[in-house]
Length: 343
Ligand code: SF4
Image (cartoon, rainbow, N blue to C red; front, top):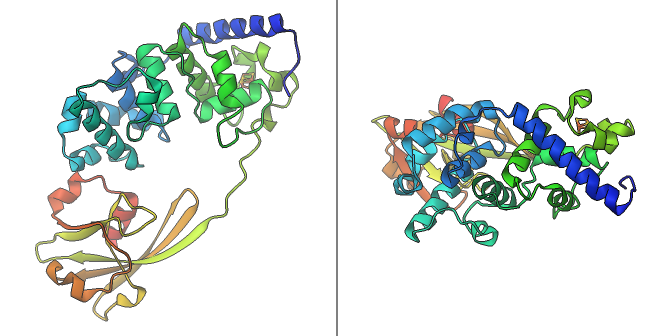
């Protein structure tokens, strides 16, 4: 699929391409708070936050989080609710839970973030991208970090389709191009190019430092790479949830019963026919990736101890608690919970 050239030509163009991109990065590197030092813990927190979240949203959250948990020991010793509260606004709370658990694993075994790729991958929530990003940026280890921005740049550079389930051929190409001496800078540079120049729409090819090596640009087919994702059909899910408030304005929430969002504290899942004439009833809509939820919300004032008698349970809950208003403001509230409480 790539443009054919001799072995020496390929090797020569790879090192020229590396030099061009690194020189561009050295000139244009953005001054971001997680780039002030290469402490593995701080790099790790930033990389976890940056997954699926924009830099502008991450910047203030990163500052708040590190002010509260400046070291891995402080994070490991924190209560999960406090960690989630500081994750508020970033979404995808499973990331925060895994980060907290992994910090606990490392602190209990007296280790820092491992330098070994296999060891890093054994930590909760540390996938191929996070391991490669932290090892390369914090320790200079030669691992290519491949995120959505890198996939787009590589697809255009060599006119590739989307990667398969194992990430190929993009991971192999990213590893081939990686600068062995400046692995962390290289990973940051190619990600930044994808974010600021080789953007999904209207890439700025004339300003691109590696346009000379880009096949899609040379052949005028930039907009064809990578080809659009095949859209998965949206699954529609209906459910009924009960917002049960007690006399002191506490609210009963449960975790684990709604199988689509098992990590979230949510109102109590009940059978559809659980409504009583005196209940206030509303409806909320919520969408995540390939699911669209239509949730009927029943609001009821009652003694939470009588809950079992009031509702016929639909699912098995792993945990259920009464949250006071103060506690509610401390936990990381999902937007689904916020909408349900507004009803
Ligand atoms: S030349 Fe254009 S398409 Fe190719 S890498 Fe640069 S910005 Fe992307």
